[in-house]
Image (cartoon, rainbow, N blue to C red; front, side, top):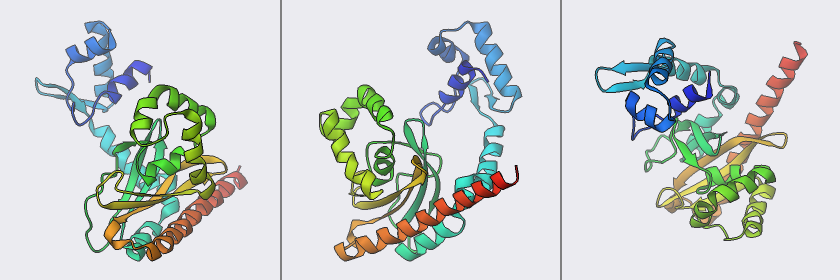
Length: 253
């Protein structure tokens, strides 16, 4: 698939669920013939569908692929019933997230038996790297060269999120999170909610994070470490399952 086709797909979001050919022509700087050729190719593949005279929306193949991910995603398979158990044991909303470019993408949310306040992180919603335990623990494990790139591009957003105004200070604030492999925050994403997150690693490469989001009022100081310990235990089991599956795959070669 060409880069331009990918840019067309990436242009759809909740604020622009339907795109018109003329809009895409202007954004991409291509001819009418080119944009209609691209739209036809995406429509034939099932990635887009025509919406009467309004334009184009995402197509049915997206739904089909989402089902495939739900059933076959290695990270979800490695998690198994651990996410449900963690939600029951902690009474919080459990989030399984992975790195998605410069964002964090929630691939599964598991709610506890007793409802809690709605959590911003939900399946399929990409979130920024700079706020909340779920994202920050991933940010702390990115390679230095990647952190340098993000600093050059997003310095204003990083500082606005509460990090120091210089790069050395930014690194210094991330280092304890990297060493602990965990992060705890209060009300950084959703008011009144605490996030307790642990990084999910493949060797030294960060895959994503496992976190529990719970009302601050239900997290007295004495309970924080107990909840975080449960998150660590579940994260360790997920990493072990991924490693075992990798070893099995190698033995079959």
